[in-house]
Length: 424
Image 1 (cartoon, rainbow, N blue to C red):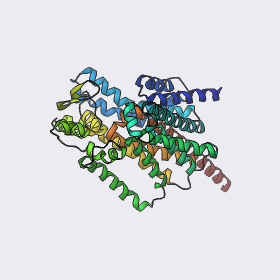
Image 2: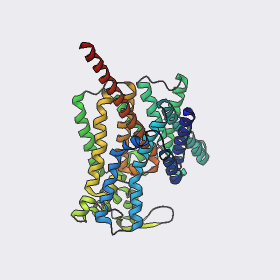
Image 3: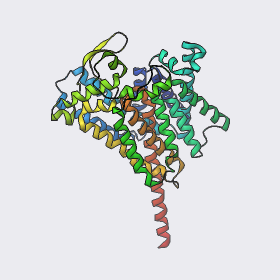
Image 4: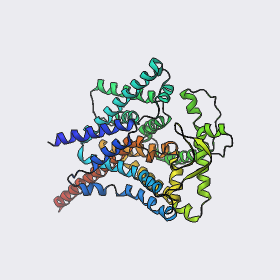
């Protein structure tokens, strides 16, 4: 009976990932709630584990100090967005009590394989065989669909190989690794490339000497700060390589004046106007932000199929979205919690004498957090349904690390107690 229940929840998770591929918000949210709501043994204890992530909601509540007079609809809309990371992390935490590690990791890999076939099949149906040589154009023709299941599955396979955890036979392992790698290629997504690189770098990061860790973190932080002010000039060619090279150009923050510049660098212009609106507020706005606040673009910009907007409620830049809606306090809370996770889990990941299962889940936590921190800069990752699989993996890994480390500590204490008794 327990095995049947595990299979049911594994299928719910798999369907949720597939639904997120099509950005079907209602089904994805419904499935996440279905995973969370039914009672399980030690349910309250499991939910308590999500307490550190629930703190993320506090800045949103404090955002009402300056935003209580804003539109009620927009306030509830912001509450909805700020609840997304908590909901999906909690779903992952609950799944950790319902699905054994091996079944969960296998489901994660199968999800990546299915999504890889989906994006390849749909791309070919739109563009024919040319989609295989120009995946970016195919993906652009499809529209806004996608989920980073292939990068996550690819990373899962590599880390299980690194720690000698056998999920599949060698031939299946190679096949699934190749299919997920091809899925990453077919998505032609800069966001998914960042996620893949985060895990790939983490794969070898535990071999870096400690003396280099802080300089690397400093340089990475400096890079993230400098990126908004870098402008790279590239040709208008629509190839994926040029899109990668033009990424800095697109997000470079600036007060662009011409319609062409605003459209070519919309994300940078949008970020500039959001930051300007934030600075135009008072001390209360700087500290607590303003829930329900709209960003004034000062001009009409064509967004969506047939709509022009001057005021927008949501940004592509998730960090500026947090800053505008919850102020400096909100940004500080997010940075503290997620950088705190990296700092605390790095030791257990880099411990060469540690248990492989603890090390692999510590790696997943760090990789998921790094992916969210970086992609939040360009696709509002914390509040994006598309990134649900990353947040679920974060929650699942978080609970497993804490449970496994607690069990290990209990056994060590018990062994010490027995030895002490023998000595007496």
